[in-house]
Amino acid sequence: MQSYGVRLAEPKAGADSRRGGAGPSDHKAMTIDGMTVMVPVHTAPAFDSPYLVEKPDAFGRSVIRRDGLALGEVSFPLQPKFYGLTTADGIPYSKIAVLHGRDVLATTVLQSCIRYQSRTKTCQFCAIGQSLAAGRTIERKTPAQLAEVAKAAVELDGVKHMVMTTGTPPGRDRGAALLAESAAAVKAAVDLPIQVQCEPPDDDAWFGRLRTAGADALGMHLEAVTEPVRHRIMPGKAQVSVERYFEAFAAAVPVFGRGQVSTYILAGLGDSREDILATCERLVGLGVYPFVVPFVPISGTPLESHPTPTPAFMHAILGPLSGMLVASGLKAIDAKAGCAKCGACSALSTYERRACS
Ligand code: SF4
Image 1 (cartoon, rainbow, N blue to C red):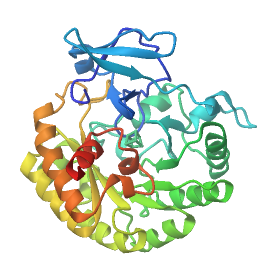
Image 2 (image 1 turned 90 degrees about the vertical axis):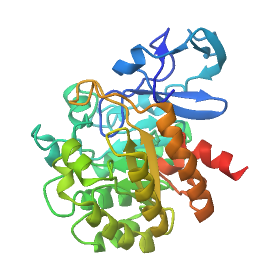
Image 3 (image 1 turned 30 degrees about the horizontal axis):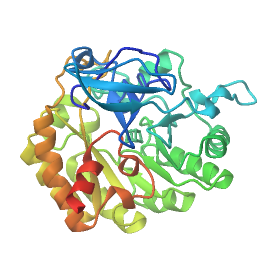
Image 4 (image 1 turned 135 degrees about the vertical axis):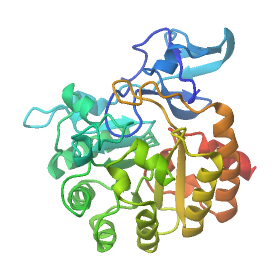
């Protein structure tokens, strides 16, 4: 389903879907067999998907079919209560942070990026400017706003952890300073595990500062693992080499702990199965969790017509990778916060559970 997407007979079912924004998008959260997953619904491939979710019944449950054959039931997480609140200065909480998956509060602290200014530099999969242009978010979320929303999301909706990502600002810390002040403010307001996500900062001392500020986990996202693919797909971000990422991973793991540093790898951008698995092996050796997700093209980006990886390609990666993770003791379930813990954008944690049994 994550490769093909799904068609919705009732497009407004459940909580709002995500459109635009940083990272993977154009998804909708669905709960299937007790597992909440993010499934593409607004992408070009989703319109031709063999999967169809029927109109929900009075209890919000829908039947999902593949080529007409009923496969089971899906439900949609309800719109969170904190979406109904606004800050004292009149900003809706939903423009400051949103619900991901079932119980993750996610925010893009800075909704602009030095890499996004020009098409020659931008990451071709990224839509960080689209939700800003559409007025669905604000550019800069202050620490006080984030603290206020996080407290409400915990108290009203029971969110369990928080993801703070950022566009890359000018400056050598790559957004680490913004993330540190944001994490400190949230931690002062509410007891909520936090993952921060940024490019490797210039100075590894930032890892200690982020940890001291209250970040429990760190994501530094390679996205693509080989230099030719990185330079083709994300020419700006590829100026930071894979080797610099590995140096940063090696410095960050002793600070955050094994399995609390992770990286997002988008399968389907051109890296081979062998390249992805070889990189994962190196990452796992360092204690870094490689969160491999199927690439999903976002409408309005240069890659909007790029094909999604086939289920067979994902299976050929996630099968061996889950075995590697289980053997090394790095498991999604042990992550304190963040995408690895949430797992909704990939079937990897399901493969892990299968590898354990
Ligand atoms: S895996 Fe990460 S990006 Fe995907 S829904 Fe969960 S928190 Fe959001």
